[in-house]
Image (cartoon, rainbow, N blue to C red; front, side, top):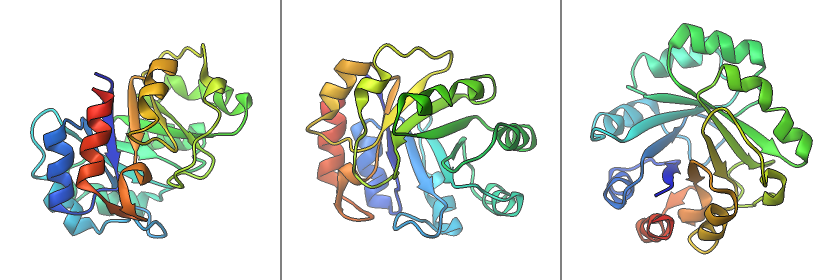
Length: 203
């Protein structure tokens, strides 16, 4: 089965729905402008309940060292997802300082955006390709990724839901799929039934 990341989890019942359905990655958003933002104390409580084999991922957008210190000093994260315009140098600096696997997200509008990810392959552990406006529920032109090969595993995100994820997996064969708005009942509010349907479709 293609691995699944459910991003933007904020409550125990939604976490339970994701884990019991088979999610491999659980995403906590540490970006205050987002409706999916989670406070550090809640994230800590949820992360401590994760079973073996499920990885906690902290999503950050152009984070400062101060922000990373605050979160990583309290929340037991397994991975970091960098979702801003972090330079190669900044990503390398974060990787060296915090020694956690890194997922680097790249917004896709043209083929050049995919090429821009190539230099990061030597530094990061995963690549993630998303719509230009992450978390918007909009997809991008998947044909841009057809035939693309990478030296690191990669995730597909952007506009995925239970109705289209099968086609996405069959067309592109990503190592993992990442969903947020596609399993929500309202913006920032996850739906257990939609989570279960999405992961079942991936299976």
